[in-house]
Image (cartoon, rainbow, N blue to C red; front, side, top):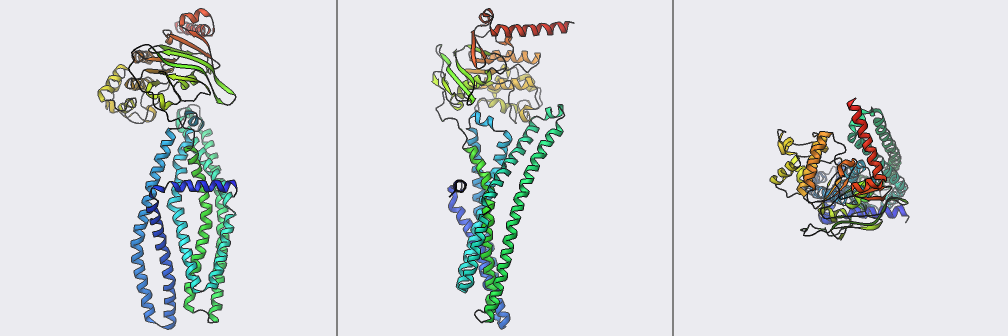
Length: 590
């Protein structure tokens, strides 16, 4: 067995494992449904024989028996098919709901670097189209396969009982069908993998277009974005046509073989009737059984190739589920602060996004309870990466981080200890109150309103007709930048964690909004250990300690006045910003 066959087998078994909790009901439904449908055709074979013999022999009792058999079979089968179909479809719906929920749960546990390496459009493709291929396995392919096997097997057995010579010939020809279709299995899998990947790229382009719609309009990128999307569509179409062409070839050859098979059966039957080896009425039954045998092998062959397309989608789901996860470690709970102690300790930390490209190199820093420290430095120096390491988003390659004295190794472990206000606050679809409550899900309405007041957000919130129940749209589209930032600060206030991370929280705001944000941040930082990334050095002059980061290293540290006197990188950055402000002031006065 080659590696690709072994991989497909493992994927197939893994897909089947999803149905394990309700395998009994599902099996009963599929088997019952298949046995009922196969039974109809088996019964009809003997009905045809009776009707032909009734016509030849002018035997009314045979005709009446055939009519009664048809009626009883139709009524019984209708009742059974409704029940069995409901059983297995109920199992499919329940199982697919669990698969979607479990896959989403697994996605929430992925490491930050895993998520950042994968385009959001690809996640959407996996959670929609790729998961849908697993549903096709349970809802279509397994029931079709079971039905084909039962219908075909019963036809083989009954035909062998009726005439073993014809049965043996048809069985041998059927095995030829399976061998022929197996030749195409691997090529269908490769096409399936490429189609799933191309559909993922289509979702990437669509997500980019919607997320950057304003930039698309501003820079007249409509044609370029449309071109990318059309290229992706063309790729999917080309691959789908290639698969359809190959499937058409298989179907055509299968049909030709089936037709020759039927013709051969009729010729053999005619010869056997002429020799009085079988009766004329037996021909109808034999042909019906021949149809069942040919159907089984045709279906098995076709489903073998279809299954490869489904496994291609399932493999992308498994790749997401198997992605690197956060470690399951005990959370570091908030405890009352009675004395000064290290809230944050980073010792000799090193980190690289890719092997050989270190972005944080031997960094050590500390922050006592209630201290305010700042990270400054040139763009691309490693400030944001350093903050993400402190928040547990990434795992260190070397060194250690301790939060409140406990070694921190994952974001889930330490997230209870801190609140985070980024430069571009992310707000979720929903109401203002819901977005503030995300800071602490058990917060009362009174606590939410108090947090909004402290963030200087209450007044503008009450200016909306719906107040705190105002739906703010996707990513807070109905709010200004300053309003979104104050909602994010209110959310951090509701959480009331002992550590606060601020990532250039005011750099993208106008002066009026910045004043309001600075006031709300001052309230937020009271009695908190605060780590700030600063673009404007004027905002962190009062920090207890400033770390100057350049090329992934701490090149200076100290208070504002000390760093100015040292005439190093910090002093140079400060002079540049002072010169820039003076130039702007002169231009405005002129």
